[in-house]
Image 1 (cartoon, chains in turn blue, cyan):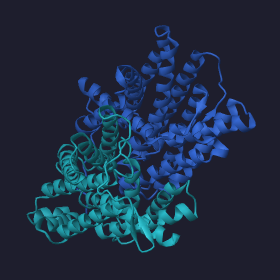
Image 2 (cartoon, rainbow over the protein chains, first blue to last red):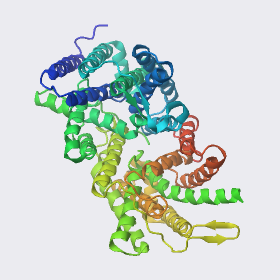
Image 3 (tube, one colour):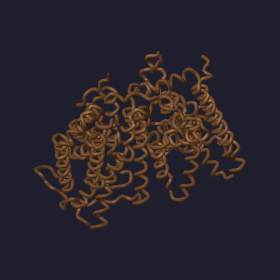
Image 4 (cartoon, rainbow over the protein chains, first blue to last red):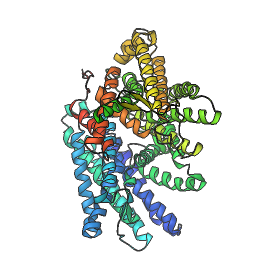
Length: 325
Length: 296
């Protein structure tokens, strides 16, 4: 199907090009930022960007509000970590296993929560997140519990990690762009805007909702595995609800349901939080406050504000009749 | 005697759970959203009680109403500042309405935890006991004096609140709004006021719960996280929006955890409730007592 002329695809193309430009800027950044510590900060911010992008596929494009992105990151990190710990597998097998394991768990969870919406979905995924974290931190014999696991690194230097993250982010963004401009992308957004209407026009709700859940979980798992090899250490703290809070705040500040939002949100929020850490650990206070302000008054996020400055209107939510209560 | 001991202790814990869960359930009834900052109302109450008693040296019996007042005010402010868009300007907020509520209350929870961490500090304070007697023996049972008195206060508060909601003028309006918001507003009920009252009441109840338990679970910035998760389980178990349902579900959960911690696994006692929550949401989303939602 030819969809090139549709206005939402024009906006998608703009977002895609801008996100490529941002990634290019990040790629040349090491020429200016030579400090290994700050390069490490940007690597971690790219880990969060992957989680944010993955969560945005679910929450922003499919309308499924999960509270478990950090949990899937933790699952991915532990998949490769445990394989390396017990079987001494290389990172290639470990990372592939991380994608498959978290994708499969995402598939199962996605199937289970199919019928749930809004607060019910949030509560179920929150319980799932807490159960997974408690199980990992309590299975001391198998995972070493809260002590965490040491994970072998891949490279000696910071810079190869840096470019590995840039490359993976690039692949994810390109894949997402082609997904969103295909029929599948339209189906996902149709489900987000009105599930019943989409079903009545023949969209396979079960299939596409499960697909989005699996894809999102697999990307989170990939991000977690890469992070684990970079930090050379994984612990149940990766799956704390506060981590999910950080991911959500990045997407909301950047712009929910856009391709640029999670990327600029993650990079800005994480790098800014490093500065705030120096001032006295105020980062979470500031970001929670920013999220509330953005959600309350600037629902389109930073990207929406930027578009408005250039005279391009932010996507308007479809007006629906008040829900029958 | 272990069985009786576990039963009584479970029931007492259940009473405190109920104090929190009633507010959460009322909020769900009237706004159809889950308040993810509910545990922080509890935490603020615990601090208000403990710090006012420790710093000002006033009797805990004065600190307790003070904690209630702080909770009432916090609930009111949160409703006015953040919950308004949920029902004013209804149509344009129809899409992403649930998501807005989740984002804002989740962020509020992180904000309150961290601001308290900065202002008060991460250390635990021990809340003063309501009564000096350390052990009260009733027949074969020995219960700590504070626990018993606190449970009695909690039962009294629950009864008063239940009566207010059942019979008072405002309570009946709240019931009407949670049955049908549009219908209630057509009948001349100020739905905004009803929402404000519910949120304020919920804040107050959670704060009293935190205050009463401050002697047992000493207040730290994240002390509210687990009570909050318990109350999510309870409102699902008892049927979202049903007050009697959440009271009974609280007692059930309290007893279940008390026995499960001994007979199943102590390590994993906090996960029982979460499994119950998932199972109920999947197979019986209306809860034990709730009415099944009907779609037109």
